[in-house]
Amino acid sequence: MDLQCKFPKDFWWGAAASAPQTEGAADLDRKGKNIWDYWYENEPNRFFNNVGPSVTSNFYHTYKEDIQLMKALNFNSYRTSISWSRLIPGGKGTVNAKAANFYNNVINELIAKGIEPFINLYHFDMPLEMQAIGGWESKEVVKAYVNYARTCFQLFGDRVKRWTTFNEPIVPAEGGYLYNFHYPDIVDFKKAIQVAYNTMVASAKAIKEFRKLNIEGGKIGIVLSLSPTYPRSHNPADIKAASIADLMINRSFLDPSVKGCYPEELIKLLKEYNHLPDYNVDELEEIKNNTIDYLGVNYYQPRRAKAKACLPNLEAPFMPDYFFDNYEMPGRKMNPYRGWEIYEKGIYDIMINIKENYDNIESFVSENGMGVENEERFLKDDFIQDDYRIKFIKDHLRWLNKAIEEGCNAKGYHLWTFMDNWSWLNAYKNRYGLVSVDIETQKRTIKKSGYWYKELIKNNGF
Ligand code: BGP
Image (cartoon, rainbow, N blue to C red; front, side, top):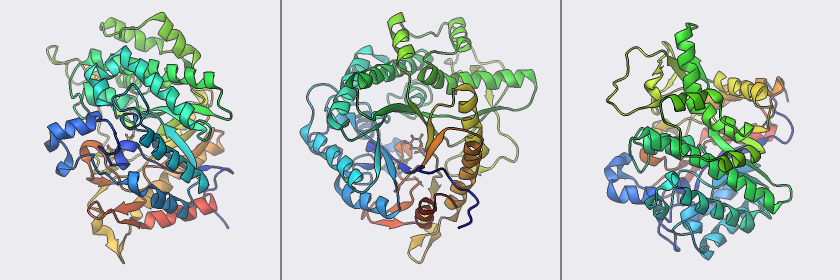
């Protein structure tokens, strides 16, 4: 068959999801509470249409049928996460046998269907008791996380060969400590920096444990949300603004994860404003010695920056935006439901950057996708005809393909997501799945994009 876009042999095709967004069963079989369960109990009004995390897409009960459906769509890989508060209620102490049993079943079922499990350890879901002692602000919590990570490697490492320590560690820092979309919902730049730094320490320490266990064929990485940063113009002031945004938002996680150290310019900047976190040389040494084997790239939107128009209010809380204004490029293409710009070439720019500046480390697109509100509008012949999603995926894949042709070491593409799932404060507002989920009946129906994705995988291109 003549294809426009052909991918390398053994390319990873599949989708990504997370435990708190799919499993439901939030208070079943001894699962402890996490910050989302707690926040919803206390402020349900913060969640779109008051839909909380207790049921989500019911994967805890339907994993067998769901995995069968993944197989029907030809997936060869699938990422999800382990819920820390399910596996070790309270965050430390003994393993919940029922949870271990559940994750064993999911992993075994995936493998039996020829789908490689990619398992992530932390996807925004801090156990409540751990948050009570400071969450990622606390080194105690780092210690508990490392124990949890070791437990996961010991329990599942005989079968799971692809691990990641964190999904988008920047998000709990900015959502929980700057911009009010994660619990603990506070505004404090210094704490945000501490949280960001502590998660990097936690990631390095988990990698160290992983290496000690010498898991045959095992690789460990991290999933980062990367937003290539573009200046409004070539004016030096705009270029400077964009480069600071890039330092704060991308390089603050990318450099320590891949290179084992923080960019000098970032350290200098934080020092100048008296915002360096509490750190010590042993931790920096651990970051240096325990870098990742491979990188997951979540790409949704670019960032455009310009020099600040006005001086910041010195009495307002300090924010990264102290150094730049976000720039709305005229004529930009938008996903209006999510409010995110769609810029397909961004995926290529990220990959070229990784090739040129990060030693062409093995990577893959670990999330990319399009959330659309009110998808029932597109129901025809009893399934959703989401041509816009097919176009979105194709347009991104073309750029990914070009990057690969130019020598980038990208090994796969995981869509966000397999079936519609619960999106934090947005709950079920925007749907991202290849498969729709009726949240009243839990009925699954393959969308047009699902059928298209199935062919894409079969042909290893389109
Ligand atoms: C990523 C997260 C996912 C997922 C996705 C879509 O940042 O890793 O958990 O939710 O974004 O974004 P949202 O759910 O906010 O629409």
